[in-house]
Length: 151
Image 1 (cartoon, one colour):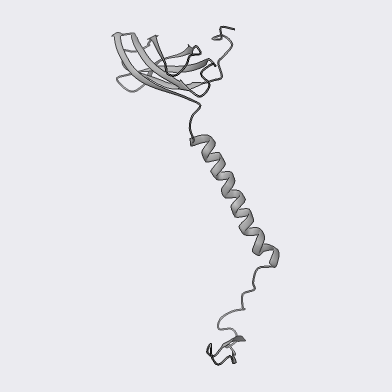
Image 2 (cartoon, helix red, strand yellow):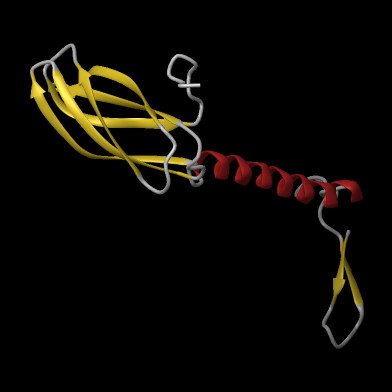
């Protein structure tokens, strides 16, 4: 049975009996605990997704950009890049790489960038296994390997 108001002014209830088997069994509403816990769980999951997105896609603590490269010969490229970091008193390691004409990585090198205020410019020479056509900065990190550290 379904109950409802005939009209807002009349205030009378009316009852309609639905034919059995035609509309299936009436739906049951969610239990009281599910009505408040499902939205809370959804908000918590959304918060976790937002936090993970911010950590992975937010501002980087170290940013590097290539400013120039020069192909010296068929096995050497010189790469110049700038590093900006949130903690200028800390050393960083940057990975630079060269690519050949077919897009393969022809060389890779880790470069130690010493502490310095503001933007630090670095230049390095990279030996390659194929004739290079470009040089680029792959990325930078505060996690300097022991073999690069000067301490």
